Image 1: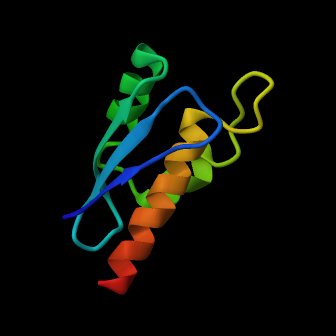
Image 2: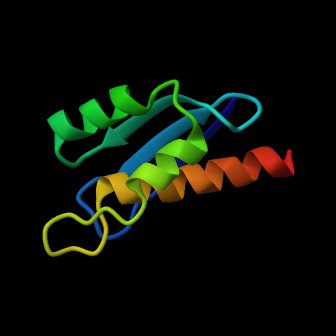
Amino acid sequence: MIEINYRPRGVCSQLIYVALDDSGKTIEDVAFLGGCAGNLLAISKLVKGRSVDETIELLAGNPCGPRPTSCADQLTKALQTAKSMAHEA
C-alpha cells in the first residue's frame, strides 16, 4: 500500500491522507483533516475503491466559491503525488 499525508494549499482542509493499492492505480482510503466535515467525508466515501486516474479527471480544477481550488481539487494533487511515488517504487 502507498500512503501519503499531503498538505493542501488555498483551502480550509489542513491535511489529506491518501492510501493507494500497491500498483498506485486504485484508491484504498482518503481522509481529510479540517474543512467541511460532511462534504469531505462524502468525497472520501465516493472515491474509495475508484481508479486514481478517473478520480483525477473528475475532480481536477473544481473551485470552491471564489477560490481557484477546492479540497476536491487538492485531493487530485495528493493523488498525483501518491501515484508518482508508486511509479518510483
